[in-house]
Structures are given as structure tokens and as C-alpha cells.
Image (cartoon, rainbow, N blue to C red; front, side):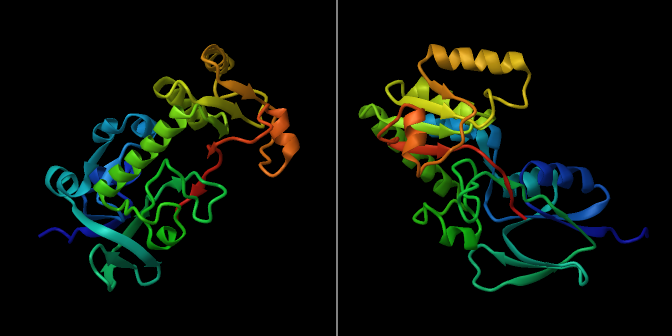
Length: 265
């Protein structure tokens, strides 16, 4: 008999959590816990909001993949507390009103980040809202995105909102011209061509960290399809001067904030 395998608890079943589970399972007893029942391919999620059937290509339910394909244990629940000294996690599983203690020798926190800098819990469209505390502050309390069907409902709701904005030829302001802002602006323009789009950034050009040629390419494309760009521009929604500078004296019908990152742990 060899020595007993040690237990690893992985908090978060998305990119880093699932890769870690797969690579560690030969040497450890691995348990993955996630507050939602599915994996979502975040980099593709913008397309889902403008073309909802795309969500199927971006998601899968975690339990069959982790337990049957990879061969580790999956808990659908939320880690409420980690006790490093005791090496235990307090977990509230889905459908349970009480918590339970799960022991481990090693714990990996793979809980990612959020993108909404002006929301108390960092809420944004780009990630499902799945933690109990965050759901209390949510702008979409009526939808439970811990379920894949809840996520689908939210995607459809945003799609219908964009549809209505398109029908009334609405003005939309996108704050932040990084990866997300530029992709979001161009996705909306492609699928909802009657929406009048403006994108701003406090940097001197779009796609700050990318090579100059990439920024030029995207800027040329946005200009060609009629997306107005304003750079070296600080976002200040309360200032009439700000709205005048970006040629929207009456404000915008809708705003999407595509700046900032908040860690989830």
C-alpha cells in the first residue's frame, strides 16, 4: 500500500479550475466547487448577447464533464468561508439551506474576476451573477444565473433590449475602448445597424495594450461603419460638458461600461 492520496479543493470550475483539476487528478483526490452548474467561455460571450443561439457553443454543464470525463468530484455550491489553519471550507450547496464543512490538504482559489467597476460587487453582463450576496445587489435579481437556463434567460433579455434600441434608432455610449469595448461596439453595429454608437477611452487610442497596427485597423473599421470615437476622454456622466464634447448633448439612451477589473476572491 502506497501513502494515501492528499485532498485538493479547487474553488471555481472555469478555465484555471478545470485545467488544475485535470492535471492534479493523477496525484490527488480532487474536488471542484462552483456556485453555478455550467462552464461559460467568457471570451466569446459578447456574441451571445447579439446572437443568443451562440450561447450553446460557449457553455456546458460541469457535473458530467468533471465527474465522468475528467474523473474528479464536483460540488455545485458556494464557498462561504475558508479556514486555512483548520484546512476546511464552509460550503453551501445548491438546494441546501445549511452549510457543510469540507476538509482538504491543499486549496486552489480559481474564482476569477469581474468587470463592473461602478457596481458594488463588480457585476457586469460579461459574467453571470452567482454569489448569494451579489445577487441581493444585482440589477437582474429576477434571474438566477446559477442555472444555465437562468443565464440563457438573461442573454435573451439583453438581446430583446438591443432589439428595441435598434428599432428606435437609439444612441448608445460604450465607455472603454479596450478588447471588450471595441468588440461590443462592433458586435452591436453588425447585428443592430440602426443603433447609433459612440465609444470613448481615456487613452489616446483604442486597444491600448495591443500593437499600433491593431489599433489602427480597428479604428479604421469603426470609422467606416459609423461608430464615433473619442479618445483622451474621461468618463463623467454627471457633467453636461462631457456629453457636449462627445457630441451627445442629450446624453445616451443606453450606456455600457467596459472598463476595469475586480477580483472575485
